[in-house]
Length: 81
Image (cartoon, rainbow, N blue to C red; front, side):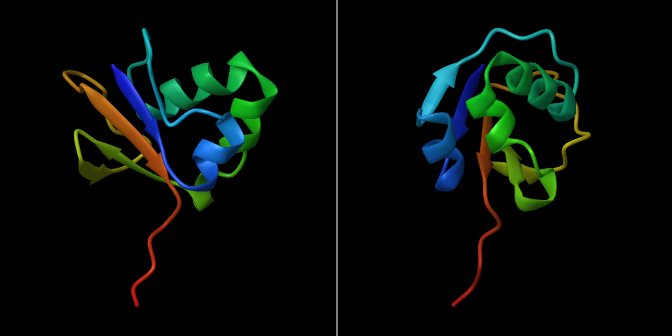
């Protein structure tokens, strides 16, 4: 699946996107896999309350299933203005 990173998440990880082969069942499982890779991923995912996730371009929750999902995007909360 494609994993996209935006704003400071991208800056911490150092990539705008990557293809990931995963056995993760939920977004939380994917975050755990990514965090275990390297310190830069662990730093990006250290505080999930500061992150939002979209599955196939729809806002979702971290406990959501990844079944059939082709794209996961991580980004900080958006503010209006």
